[in-house]
Image (cartoon, rainbow, N blue to C red; front, side, top):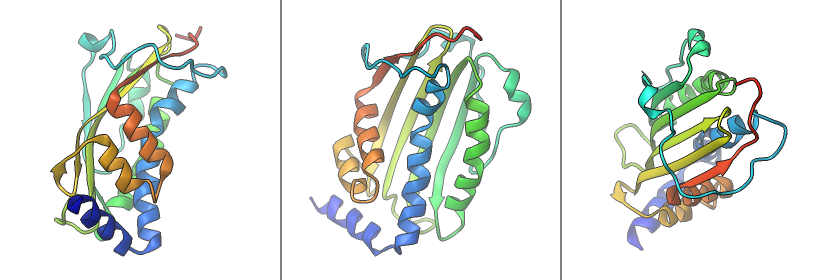
Amino acid sequence: MPVLRHTTNALGALPTSVRLTLFGAVAAAVALLPAASASASASAAEPGVGGYADPSYASACTFHRYGEGETPPLSLFSADPLCVEYAKRDITVANGGAARFLLAEPARFAIAVPACRYWQLDHWSVQATPGGTELVGWDGSYWFDKAEGSAAARVRNITVAGQPARAEAAAKVIRPYDARLADALVSDAAGVRVQLPVSGLC
């Protein structure tokens, strides 16, 4: 496939440290849902009870929207449900976008973990240089409800080298650099919903 070859070559041409920064950053954020959900209890989540659906509290959400590298204020700790939307379209090493992304993620993660009901929408784009061809991109939706004992994730609008693509194509590009991220993309594109232990604190 020409698109996959072009994208893989573009990634391979990047210095190793740059590739690790890009895909390490993306993998850390894709891991947010399982990590945050697991905080509801020390017990492991039970696997799939069906495909993706928006949370039952969707109509109660007021989304707080944040730009590239922007962190939410601590005042959001009291929001229930906590619903956030993040722009992550500037994951680029050459202009510092990847670094800003990495610096923002710990605060975003810290806001999510204590929430009882949490819904995150985000919009991803990874590129080697500002204004360059988007190597990989997608839109994500991840939520959990510790009182109900459920969580779900889905990715949509996947692109490879700026062209619409299936999750498997994006995973093939990413797999040499981060196998866990590749697996997560394929799983989340299909839509996954899991049961969690109910939290008595919610």
